[in-house]
Image (cartoon, rainbow, N blue to C red; front, top):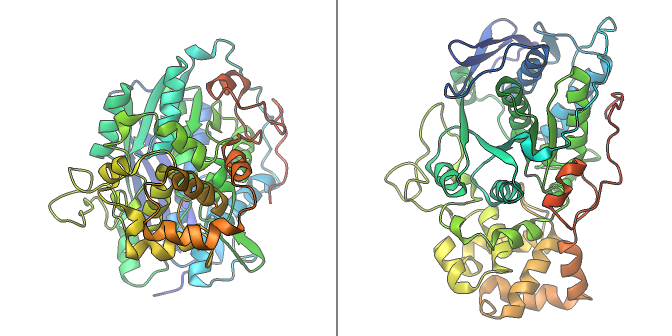
Length: 477
């Protein structure tokens, strides 16, 4: 494949009448990409504003990562906007850390590779004064939902507390529609159409791999919030996402970096620097995966539709349905929700096994995954016995050990293959099982949750590192 020299952020545009956003890019003005976002037409758009324009410009920059990674050009050019040095450094960090797994898998030296252009003539905006909703129940909250347990828990907690919640998704999927129906909450849908040229380049041998999709979702959520008049965006990223997978070129590689607290804090600062008016945070940040599943285990109405298995969402071609591994249609349309062959299935089963009996687990997953031979290497990785934590959205080895301890105390899975490994190789190394479990269930005070939402998670204390209301954007690294 030809090596192009410059990646160009060409332009972005909102067509309010047509309900579309177009993000345009090119390689050396020779290969052109146009990504299209289709907006919901059953919601009333707000009047045009500077905040909308700023959010669109940021979406344009994060959207480019899928096309930039095809050949990693040495230069970048932004025709649609200009950045301060601090803002350029933010994007350098997002692209470098967000593509960490991609660099690791492709054995690419990323050091000093990404350099967003900045202009000393671009004035930094004054930090905006954040408007605190004293009567928070009246604020409109946008909750991105991906069909998994985490966003379901966020939606249920906020709904139970009496907040005005609207669910938000990218693309249509029957599992998410079912969950929204059970929740009884409005569902706002956008459709993202990647440029067809991307798939053509991939077929010709372009570089490919993991991108920080949560960063894209976050900026798209800000755009949607500004366009449709939401005051808050509540993500569902947990504290487990803060821990990386492995080391490469003296840097921690974290599959979930764009879900991490580090990224969340940077994201909030950046949003302030460009003047958007939306408050963004993750409601579940203080909680471990184990804590979240403990809450989810009390919501049996969702057991039949929620899944954390990525085979339900994986994109293999533009605008085409994803075939079920069992044949006969799109995943989620009555087909298996859990592939039973991936690290996420293994991890989810372990978490659920901590709180649900064997019979219920088999109804949810279709079988006892602790006995699946293909999953045994993944269980060893998840328990920290071999290799490193899989490149998936899974929790820490300590959480997995705590989940196995809880499941073992119930006893109905103790004859399973994975449990036998745990009982023989892991449990004897755990000094104090009760303390380990308690530490995994204890909420952290490291978060960005506004004070008016702390009552949603009653055991969570105010953050010890809360951002100031008018914090000046500082260099980000």
